[in-house]
Amino acid sequence: MRLNDVGGIEGFGPVAVADDAQPFHADWEAHVYAVNVALLRRGVYALDEFRDAIERMPPKDYLDASYYARWWYAIRRLLREKGVLDDAEVAAGG
Amino acid sequence: MSDEHHHDGSIAQQVRVVEALLEERGLTDADEVDAILDSLGTPANGARVVARAWVDEGFRARLIADGNAAVAELGFSMARGPQPQLLVCVENTAEVHNVVVCTLCSCYPISLLGPSPSWYKSEAYRSRVVRDPRSVLLEFGLDLPARTEIRVWDASAETRYLVLPRRPLASEGPNEAELAELVTRNGLIGTATV
Amino acid sequence: MAERFAPGQRVRVRVLDAAGHTRAPHYVRGHAGTVVAVHGHHRLPDDVVAGAADPRVEAVYAVRFAAASLWGSGEHSVTVNLWDSYLSGAESSHV
Image 1 (cartoon, rainbow over the protein chains, first blue to last red):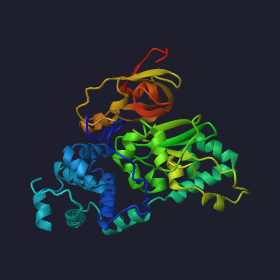
Image 2: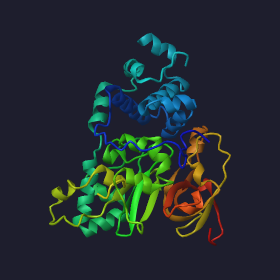
Image 3: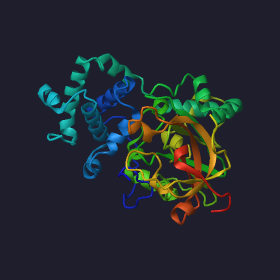
Image 4: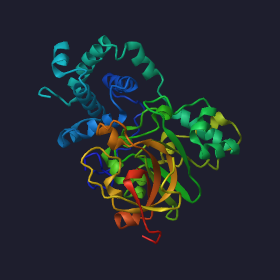
């Protein structure tokens, strides 16, 4: 069982009900969203694989990461595992 | 990943770099990114669907029977995302109140309504609404009568749920545009009555 | 494609030895519920992620569970979408 499977787990406290009308809180979040759609469309990975990659995040990192930070982890991981982009290329491109 | 950072500050730079590299390889381009962000759904779409269902009994019946076909009548599609989804509309009544969650991640009818609110994605909502929906709904300011049956829907597969709120008693006349303005995003998820 | 279960039928969620990606939430595993609808046929995510060459395409059911049976208390119900492989038939008697 993985950490994302939270139904019924106690201790997470009150829901932060404030409605954030903006879908993205920073430009990079919007780009993470769009890049994911583009890669899924092209079949670089399947949606199921994307969810699985998020679930494979180390538990502490998963809990500490923001929502789109988790998406980014999954995208980076899948690009590496699928042989599309490795860490060295990303580091060199910065 | 030895240099992996999960903190938002460093991610912005990584995203720029990766996006540029992907463009070099033909896996995306700037126009596509813009097009994706320009075509996001919004809660106003769901509000239009609800308002139509309130004024048109035939449409309401079709919406319950086949959500995908019904929203297509209004020009909406559930097929614009990575894979087509089954839209199931669940109707609130005097006896039943529906509320939607995805306990496993955050599945949501994005292509119709746009991205979900942050609270929908939170561990607090996802963990608690299946166990004690009344307490969660109280935190949203929704205090349902004790006799109301609460149905929680966990969107764990390809189905995306849309709550059809009850038409407010004070609303009069068939003006769909005015009725649509009464419908909130929370009403479409089930954390508000409308 | 014939479906094993029909609306109104009682089913039980298998206790899965799922070491990988699955879409059967832990809180319903081992529990019995009632099929309320069939929601199409879809590739089994467990197979897709395992790299199966031909992922099984199966019926997905909306299965309703009484909160009291899941948690020991509560008047509400929880309806979960579950792939055919996650389910077995159950006695139609009360829970």
